Length: 329
Image (tube, rainbow, N blue to C red):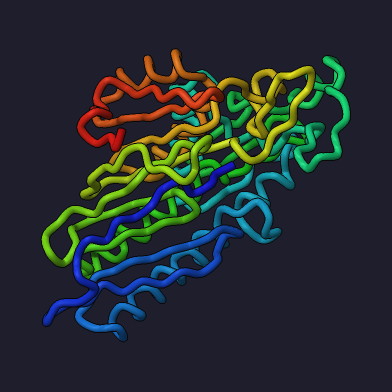
């Protein structure tokens, strides 16, 4: 669902007498993973990044629905059968996810994993699924059917065949946890970038803020705006590469689980927030809600900003994003 449309502008020199900026790119969680940290030297930078990698693995082994031994997999196996006791960290994350479902009227929903995958975006689809097939495909989806018991730390999925998938919030959560860990370790500045889920803290070595460039998916060679980031998270969700077209109508690979139909009209949403977890989940919800409803929601949320690009390449922003100030156009 995500595609990195964000470019970092590291304006500082790569090293000073006292500190260095150390960067490592690797693949984790099935996605590109990039770490940038300030450290006294390269070995210390490597040690910090190794700690970040270990934290990714720790959390993945709690919340992944692909690893059969995780708490979330156990919840899924017992759908319609019994509640499952989970670690507090997992319970709290699911609880926060359900709150975002409420906030977005179900446009973000971690029970999306219950959906039958009747839409194919690999070029093999030749015709639209039938309306009854589409309706049936989302019959088991519904965040209100996820039952939490705070006292016993249990999660219960009411219907057999239901599944939770934390892909729409988990990467943002991991980015937040890495930042928290490294700040606690004394890392003064850095960037975590997990396939477009980005969290930053501190400043560059020359005192400049980190900067990020945002591209229009319909004009990928051009950055239309550059924003300064300091202790800020940003997330972009996009559908500009995976889609199908029937009768001249473009259907994205992002499905509105409330209806079973792919989202139309939007090709990317970028969200700015203090928490990468919140930005991650909200970006999905905003994508499904569409420009008008989505911007109206964001305008009611303190400290949150968003940028939409529609399928004609037109750009829309929430009221607290001053595009003229940062625009290249």
